[in-house]
Length: 126
Image (cartoon, rainbow, N blue to C red; front, side, top):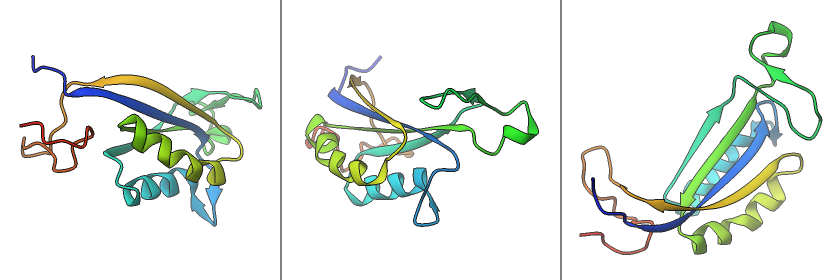
């Protein structure tokens, strides 16, 4: 196993799939803004069942409810970069839950196995 690269912060935004920002899926807007802000990476995960503050259960098992499934947008980078991104989320996320968790990056490399130029620690890991 490789040695850890370093400490980071994981930002998770929990939304409903049908949440929008100017007629665009909100999860897509968050990912594109994270990319524009130079954050190390972002992924969107679609849930198969869940509920939030509304207490309404969303599930993929019933056709009538399968259009508004839970979605989680996960972003990982240094604490400084993630916290600098939070004001943008403030203007985007009205209904939803935003969490921050400390994490440790073990591996961060591109598809070809080369370390990414934009190391989440802001350093070259070589």
